[in-house]
Image 1 (tube, rainbow, N blue to C red):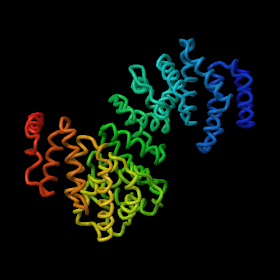
Image 2 (image 1 turned 60 degrees about the vertical axis):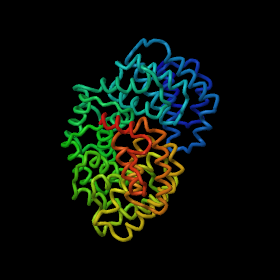
Image 3 (image 1 turned 180 degrees about the vertical axis):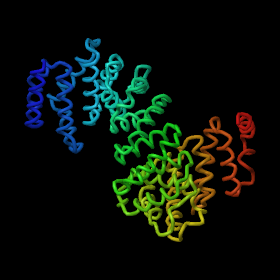
Image 4 (image 1 turned 45 degrees about the vertical axis):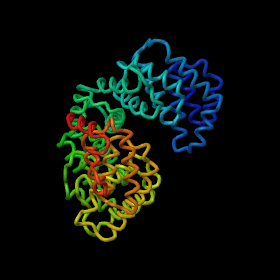
Length: 437
């Protein structure tokens, strides 16, 4: 119904109220293309709207009717794979962009996409992959992750060279979030970026680098090219871009000191006072992993540590352990200034206090890492935190590996224990652990 699609587009031009009024009247007459167009236009009209306004939209009868009609239309077996596939991808992308977390719609769209995946073009593949991360997760063999793997296979081959920069970064970001590693696709996308890195925004390049790092796919020419391209566009980088690029190099322990110095000098000029946990923790983790800090005169490290001090009480177990590990690796660095050392000690003390509250959420391997980091840093009150970790270690002893046991043993000796952790009450367990390692 092309004429009805024109009505949808015309109403959207008048605003959200006019579009919703049309939806309320004509939703029962919509086909899948009309429904996808209406959702897409709503997503554009509500771009930048606050959560309160979006929640009001989701409760409106017109929006609920549109959602029901979309589900009805995508549930039957496909008739025209190409047109219906594009509409399913458009609808999923629109709902994800709106932030709609309707479980029934997500289930229906994922099932419909599985049935129509062969009809998707490159834009549909990228948009659907991005949407899968934002929509409620659908579990099972025909769920979200399985669909992401199928999308990766669809994107392989000669068509990979035709992906636009935004499509490349969206697809790779989504696959990394699902942990889908497709070697052929990763190689093809690497070639795509290498052949046209100048077409990518700094944000796109940082996203690509982080996706490869998250999936553990090391392609040195690609990483080098992203580093060079980012350096050339230094003034366009934001703090998140800097963090992602340095973190990507650190994941593979690849040192590029001149580039790091330039990136850190640029980041030091940015306002980091409102930056979130990921940026702060990832940058400090990267410095610790590389055993490198920005040179004297660069204020970035001090800014990060001050921000980490503000964020420390909000960190959950996983991030707290990563930050604690980073501080332990940095605290003895010869290039640390007096102010940075004082700031580091303050963060360590806060994390030591917080670890006692987070101990029940600490996993088997994180227990050992935390104990080692505390014993290395020895902040005020670390003995009580270490004692809580030793107790937690005994609870999760079945899942400890040898490295965790060694870390715990090191911490117990420094804490003044008369026996090592390996000989305390669980010696047979540690013996089996040694055998596995």
